Image 1: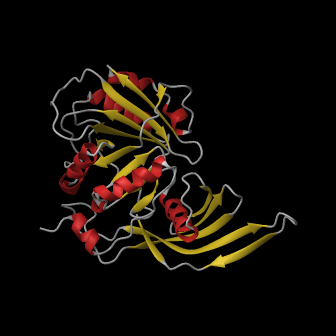
Image 2: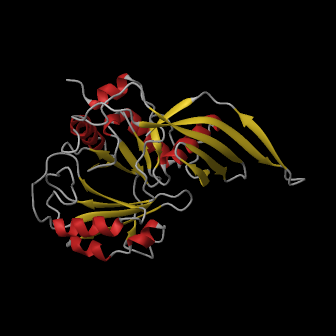
Image 3: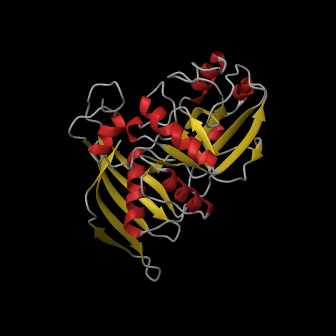
Amino acid sequence: MSTCATASRRLAEPLAGTAAPARTWLLVEQPGPWGADALTASHLDPAVGRALDAAAEGTGVRIALIRRPGRHADCHRPGVQRVFAAHTAPGRSWIRTTALTDAAELTRLDLAALGSGEHGGLWEPYEGDPLVFVCTNGKRDRCCALLGRPLAAELAASGAEAWEVTHIGGHRFSPTLFVLPYGYAYGRVTAHGVKDVLEAVRERRIVTGDCRGRSAWERPAQAAELAVRELTGEEDADALDVTRTEGTAPHWAVTVTHTDGRSWRVAVEQGASEPARPESCGRAPATPARMDVISITLLRTDDRTDDRAEASVSPRRVSRRS
C-alpha cells in the first residue's frame, strides 16, 4: 500500500513554504506513548495539556511534546522533565531551558510574552549544540513513525542533540524535522543531510536543500525568503528578514530585507496541487494548497542620492506547496 510520503515523493512536491508557523516553540519532555492529540493523550496530565493548549491560542507559541529517541521506560510520572522555550525571529532568536518536577508549573508561563520574543530571564540560556526535533508520532501518521524514528535514533547514536517530537505538520514530507535555534524545518531528509544542516547551523549558516521554511513566518513569507536565498546564494542565518506581507490568499506581496540594506519584493500566489494525493495516510486524496513564487523585484537604494531603483528578476517558476 502506498503511503502519503511515497506519493508526495513520487509527485516531487516542492517543500518550501510548508513549515508549521511558530514564532516561539514550547517543547516539553514527556516519555511514553503519545496519542494523536498528544497534549491530552499521553502521560502528561490532560488537565495541564488542555490548559496549555488554551493559553497558547493566538500567542504565536506552538507547544509540542518531546522525548529521547529509542526505547525508554513507560513511566507515568517521570522524575524530571526537560523543557525548552525557543524564539525563532531573525536576529532575536534564543533558547531557554529548565528541568521541572511538576509540569503544572508551565501553566503559569506568560505565553503572550514568549510569543513576542520576551523571555524576561526565564530559566537558563541553552548554549549547547543545535537541537534537532524529528517528528515520530505514528498515532498521527504512520509515515512519521516508519521514517522518523529510525532517523532520530541514528542521529542520537551519532552524537547529535536529537529528540523525537509529537507533531510539526506535513506528514507527507516524512521524515520531517526542525532545528533550533533558527527554527528552519526540513523534509524528506537523510541522516547525512541532517548532519550537514547541523554543521551549518554551528557556523550560523542555513542549508536550503530540502528546506520547508523558517517557522517564524507564515507560509507565503517562508516561500519568499527561501526564494531570495536561492536567488542570491545567501547562507547567513540572520541575514534575511521578512519585514512586510501584504495581501490575502491567493495573492501576496512579501518584502524580504537584508541586513546590508537591500530588499526584495516577492510576488507569491496560492494554487492547488495536481494531481490529487493523500495529505496524510488514510485520508482521501486531495489537492493541497501550494505557494508559487511568481517574481522577485530587487529594490536598491543609491547611497549617494537616496534614490530608489527597481530591478525585476524573473526566476524560474517554483511551486511552493503548503
